[in-house]
Image (cartoon, rainbow, N blue to C red; front, top):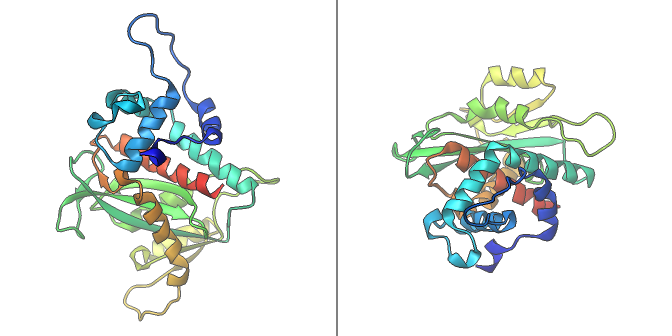
Length: 262
């Protein structure tokens, strides 16, 4: 239990200024400290336990941690945290803009909810999909959440546009990688044209062609990133009916991966 409970002091120094201001409370129980609540959220993310069985030793109930995560997501904390860590990586010259790699991964959604659908790769069981774009080192640049029935190619442009301007260096901030690498699931000439309009060179494998394109020697980094992301057990199976809450956990997982690179 020690590792999921640990909150790095330097990481907390980055996150704390982004949290909403506390409302003064004169009656009722004392408010649980934000750092303790965040530690409870990390425990659920890392171990995958249900909110209702959160250990009392943490000092925060599962309902309190759930509400705190909901409020922080509504305030845009997860997005600002991820972008700030990307900015710091860029300032440290640990970002490779030469290429981006995209892919999607299916997970089951046990309780259904928005952004779920019958997956064609899991015997029509209800599920969702995580979509990410990473750089050549596997750093997640953007992520989206869709139903399990959605085609991967529909998230190609939202991922590329979702990277946004990443500051950290002198000059105009970079917004997109030079090239985009993807498997044949993204093979569509219309999307190739859209990438070229954005000044991104597409390197997408084509369907019905012999193996040996050589893209697998580069694409493996996104598979490794999915392995890192799904090492957080709460992200292996979607248990939240609220899509925004599950997406907040996905963005938190991406932020933790970025912090490891820092």
